Image 1 (spheres, helix red, strand yellow):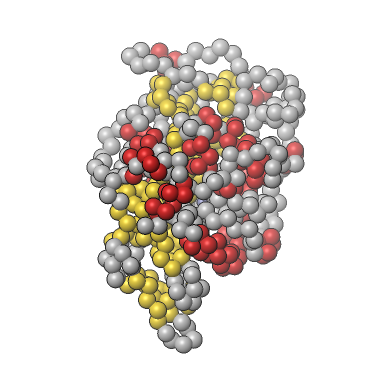
Image 2 (cartoon, rainbow, N blue to C red; image 1 turned 60 degrees about the vertical axis):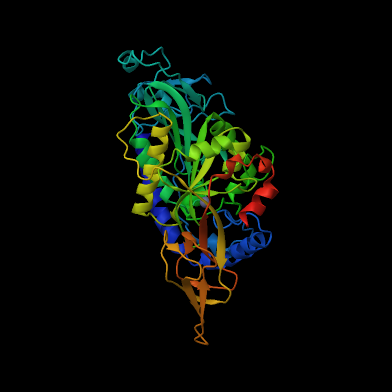
Amino acid sequence: MTRSISSLLRLMMFSLILGVLLVRPAYAGVAEAAEQDSAASHDEGSRVDESMDDEAVEDIDASMQDKDKLKKPVKKDKKSKGSQKATKIAPNIDLKEVAPTPVIIEDDNLVDEAAAEPKTSSEPTDLVSPSTEELPEKAVNESITLFNTEVLPNTSTRLAWSSGIQIAGLAQPTPVLVVNGAHPGPTLCLTASIHGDELNGIEIIRRTVYDLDPKELSGTVIGIPIVNLQGFQQGSRYLPDRRDLNRHFPGTPTGSLADRVAYSLFQQVIVNCDMLVDIHTGSFRRNNLPQLRADMHIEDVASLTRGFDGIAVVHSVGNPGMLRSAAVDAGIVAVTLEVGESLRIQEDEIKAGVKSLNSLMEKQKMISRLFVWGQPETIYYNSYWLRAEHGGILFSEVELGDSVKKGDILGTVSDPITNTEYPIVANTAGRIIGMAVDQVVMAGFAAYHLGTEAEIPPEKEKALINSKKSANLMLSD
Ligand SMILES: [Zn+2]
């Protein structure tokens, strides 16, 4: 079982690389459509902040369909006698081991073959957790049950989520890493690659979760490194039905494919979380400074942002259908963590993301490390996009993270035919929190995401609570 999973993962990586190479040309076409969408939101003075990361692009280049003809191994679920009863996981299973499951819920007779293997030492018997006895001075955590599997305290394990809507024999479960600490505490969920072409978050979750020691952890960490596995395999932002999954939360069991996938993830995993960090990157060849997107009108959310070490926090109400918005509506304290650019693995951004999550866990008293805090104060931003007024080739003069003054030239758009140069000028002082990489652009292209420092986190402006319209107006100020 373990071996077949690891060979599957290797194949996934290979198909990803192939997918990336083949998909790249398709993005030129998509970007324009995305731009139209963001231009519309800019005019409304709303959703500006999220527009570059969560566009709802309806049409996608037809060439996307030609890529990645790799055959994926299809594993038949082996039938074995088993029950639907929650399976207990032995303490201290390593994340590299796959826990018994996934259980196919519809069929009483189907249990993953791993359940039958004695190697996993996971017989559903009464197991004594030895490590909890070693720590008498602290309270003992409880088990957590996910996918009909009970994960005991002081245990780390790997489960699998399947939305259950694939053709039965082709179901491809998504790995879910669970570290259930020895001590009680909150449940922190980490999700990445909801947009399948966003890779930094996958690595951020790997480093963060594998660095945890269940003995030392208070609470539970649930990491889903690759939510949109099919998009990931194809190097695509979207689901196979070309929909943006991050527009369909919390989902419905009777809607579109995206609605159903969203519903399954939300009901099976997300509802178990107290806190959620959904990790994204800039889209369509735009790079984001590591930053949180958070609805600062919600006090718990604003309070959570203060747990991140010195990271830029951009106030954003969020769009309907986003995982962050749906989670907040369900009472889960949720933020989006933006790091870098899609289709790339960026070491510095990944390190910043890992550091952020560690600082959060430390602040939440989930871990205790000698964490060196960088900046004592979180910096809050409102933000808006500066757009190219002319088509041509964009050459930037600023870098991500730069502070700029009003009147500074951020870059120029150069018309390759007429040899005319059009500067893009900052119309206010601020910081470059997101920007396009040099490329061919059309008029209206959102080139620079400028963050303007907010005096105070606006969460105390109670008058604006529950009024998304007002919040957006405030953003455009
Ligand atoms: Zn994204």
